[in-house]
Length: 381
Image 1 (tube, one colour):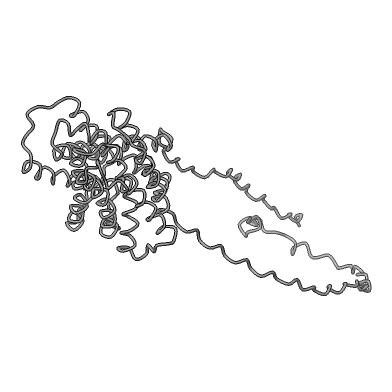
Image 2: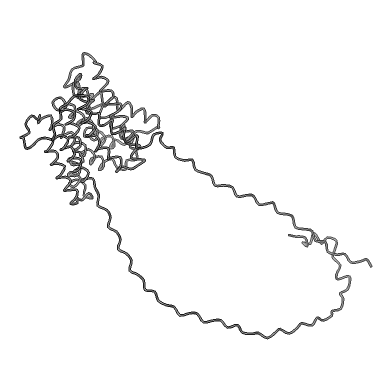
């Protein structure tokens, strides 16, 4: 009889070493503008503040409608180039184009032309101060046209303070003596057009699916078409192109209408509309300083004093009430909980000893493992 064979057990196959954890992919950081937003904010304030000086110089060589047409044409060229670089799509809805036509008239064609005609008879400093009344008109109109914009005491008080500043600028106690009423009225009407246009845009062009840049570029294009139709009806073709007025009109359009819109668009995206609209309060200050320093315009004491009152009133009309703080939660009474009962260990009796019992040896044949034990699964891991 041959000796019994011991079962052969193979070692389980070694598992592959675990892979080290892979780092999560890092999303590319958003591209930051090359210039800090404060620098761009200051640039936007300077551009819009000098716009009234540029209008004044432009009207010395061209008719008011021609100044407006050149301004819109140059501004549209800048925005069309920006739209091409960013591959913006034009609005496709005929309804949207219809609303943009009205917006172009209210926000571009009409106010730009009114300011150009106004500066034929009033200084650029006064035109810049009249432009600062737009927030006052906007607050008064929003209460009527926008049901969700309810007035507060502070905002109504700001409206009164602002119009008191307007009367101060105009010298109401002097009977408006020495003031060109038609020119001043056109400047105030131009500033009134802006909030009317903003309310119209808010009601008709929200949720169109087009970007702000595409809508603004399309709006300027339509405004240019409007002036292209109107200008030949009221003016004759210019016989000469004087250098300084021509440069002023081109700069007014490329900077004051084209680049300024791109700067404002970027500021709204980066710091929000509340901070971006603060540029309105710097425009009359810069317009006044530019008119006095570069054009030699006279400035009486009531003009800067009234401008400061207007700005204070405009700031009050733009303020919002802070949300009321939530009332503190009532203090919860601390209820003492009874201590848990101590657990007393209970001794357990020892287990009886197990006495080994000798067993007879098994037959050798029963302990024999067939040669194909591996195939029977003994080495299965």
